[in-house]
Image 1 (cartoon, each protein chain N blue to C red):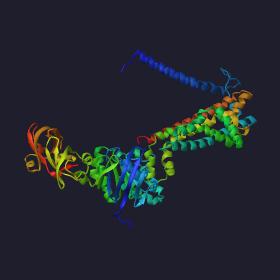
Image 2: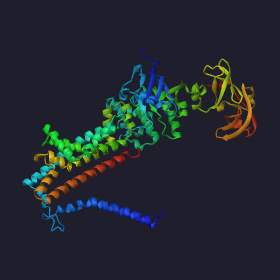
Image 3: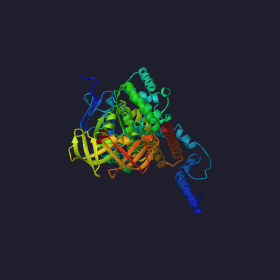
Image 4: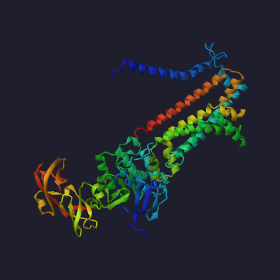
Amino acid sequence: MTSTPLERGATVAVAALGLMIMLFLIIPMLVAIPLSFNAEPYFTYPMPGYSLRWYAEIFGDDSKGVAWRSAFVNSLFIGVCASVVATTLGTLASFGLSRDGVPFRGLINGILLAPMIIPVVVFATGSVYFFARLNLVGTYTGLIIAHALLGVPYVVITVTAALTGFDNTLYRAGLSLGATPVSVFRKVVLPLIAPGVASGAVFAFVISWDEIIVTLFLAYPEQHTVPRRMWAGVNEQLSPVVIAASTMLFVITLGLLFVAEYLRRRNDKLMSST
Amino acid sequence: MKTSSDPIVQFVDVQKAYDSNAMVVKSLNLDVANREFLTLLGPSGSGKTTTLMMLAGFEDPTSGEIRLRGRSINGIPPYKRGVGMVFQNYSLFPHMTVAENLAFPLQARRMNKAEQATRIRKALDMVKLSGFAERRPSQLSGGQQQRVALARALVFEPELVLMDEPLGALDKQLRDHMQIEIKHLHERLGVTVVYVTHDQSEALVMSDRIAIFNEGRIQQVAPPAEIYQNPQTDFVAQFIGENNRVEGKVTSVEGEICQLALKGGTVVRATTPKSVETGDSRVLSVRPEMIVVGPDAGDLPNCYESKVQEIIYLGDHVRVLLAFDGIETLSIKLTHRRAANIAVGSSVQFGWKAEDCRAL
């Protein structure tokens, strides 16, 4: 196989375009991260020197440090709870929808995916009015429920994808062997769709982890998350602490995505040649 | 009072429709005897698999009743029926070892660990896979996986085991071997087996009785030899084995023997399982191996002479094609020795007994 100069040129062009798109996506992060190590409180290159002072501020003992750390704890707590709720609801919903003979399957699926499609401001406004009646504004419960709802569509999408690769006769086999539907779900279905469930859980966590709009509407200072604290920081006095905090968010998110990918590959290896 | 001669399964006027106009199973009445090996045989879409799925509990009959040990099981979910099942694609749980797969039905029955271990060991011995307990399904060959699936369906000692084309995914040699192995297991364990296949030779080899399905109806239920030798309908005659099929009109009837005139004027004497009257149209069917060629044919009630059109060599036998009744071609199966004196274009005498020829 020989290729004409035109074909070779096209290959190079496609590769160059792909590279440029990747750079476009990644450069904002690559530019921001070094600034968190800037010795001076400016956002310009070249940096006059390197320092960990902004990180020290987050881990410091003064009131600012306490507020930052409380924001990290809040983000983690709300994120984990929202992810657990979203993963449980989303997984059960996807499995239910994958059964034969579900009426209005398309409509139900659309409703489940709605939080992803409708503008978050609309969702947040609605949540405030609705949660106010239930006394859930300014509570952890309210924030967790709202964040969980935003995460459900991502769980539904990943779990539905995992279920399309699931051989339904395995479910039938489990029933024929005398196990109840709940037991078959727990022992056969869940282990086999675990990678999809895990990546859904990671997505749901990440959605909560950098959520700001709903948090702005629903959270009192007690519940302030890292993005909310950054928002406050940007409005008060812009300093590289915000970039230090966002770098930490970024690193944690990246780590989680690696974990999810690792789990998926390990599972693929386990399931291979079946 | 229940005795062992009572049927273990009864289908009573069972119908199944997936939507209002397409009836998949039409008025099914069938008894499965205790400890019998019954095969549901038919082309795809004939209703055999739907029948099995209704018995397993994965489909509900639209009307009628299915009884297990005399009790209606309509509406009872599959996990409460206590029926073993072997699926076409093994359906082993890929994330569990062989031993864990076998333990699954035992855990569902809350059996204690020691008893579980004994049962699993016995079941693996039974299918000759003793050393494979800790393997995963992906580390086994197709035949080994199918054996594990068998062991898993039998390990909880069900009285009734359903098999849905369990050998369909295996190659021919392994399939032949597994047929005999399953047959022996059935004889040894005394379980009742309802087996679905579209492979007629598999049905003939393994079954005590065969139920032949076509278009949602049972055409005939009988032991293999009877199905082969005495097909009751034209469909059964065509579906099982090979048949020469010629249409004719009945000209006279004497008891079970009737005489037919074919389109080209040839007269044939045949037996018939159905009541016939003069003037009826019937389809004659004669198996290729039942046609006698050579001087012996002279003594037979149906004896003709015709030109050899073609001789086809098939290894263990030879197929001879003859012109018949002017417009038809008969296929005849001969041993090499019998075919030795026959040449294409030569004229030969051939014929068959009235009882080897059926007007259906």
